[in-house]
Image 1 (spheres, rainbow, N blue to C red):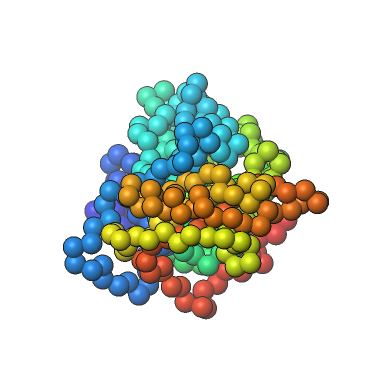
Image 2: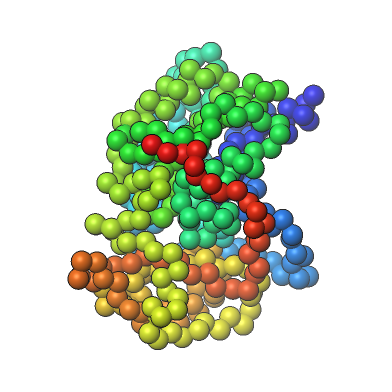
Length: 341
């Protein structure tokens, strides 16, 4: 019974869809389930990727992983997000660095001793960079739908993915339960700067989960946040997938990686109004890889992106390295027909 119970205590996340939860402590550990290659290849002997880390070309530009909780409010400058928390919730520890598939654990919240209720729960705030997600989805709607279609038989859907309004913005809500454990999972997701931002609430008490969703209406979100769009603009760069490819590239210098060539190196860059790379964010790279790639990118020239006759800054992603990416079946369902206003 214990092994069956533990196998069911899994939390839902969008691109790294399932999370494991300890039976006794409720600690959340995200293990990149949806980013596993269905046809995995063995890593060459002696190749170790432990030690790759996130880094950036300056310390002033906000990072997705740069949020923090101050005075019971989680604030993230990169996403333009403020999420007020009651004094009954706290964060035990910071999340891990971003994965090489662009998945971020932004906050892991647990009840304090002040919490009162028939059952406790957990809150997970995370984000999936849609530039690097392995799942075949162009936006948050498709990502949630894709994940819901891959729900394991140990779970029962309580609410199909559907659009709801939270803090005057469109979110996609998806509810399911692990019947053996009587553990409910309520997932709310929207899109900000080409990232699928998600809130995963978990408890045996549905009333608690509904109250936590109602508390989300106190959040502050950027005007562009939307479940099917959320492509930046205004005070932040416009995010465009694969912008630094093809005819958009006027001049480029290829980085030559002599060592550690078997790990994917996802890089987000900001292209200035003049077409130069002005900012580089490595989601996962060894220091020597970051140095070589930075020196190459600083020599790139791209066509400026023009909106209403005026050039604007663009944020896009590039993956370096030679590791094969997961290859999902062409028949994978990503329909968003069930998710409409």
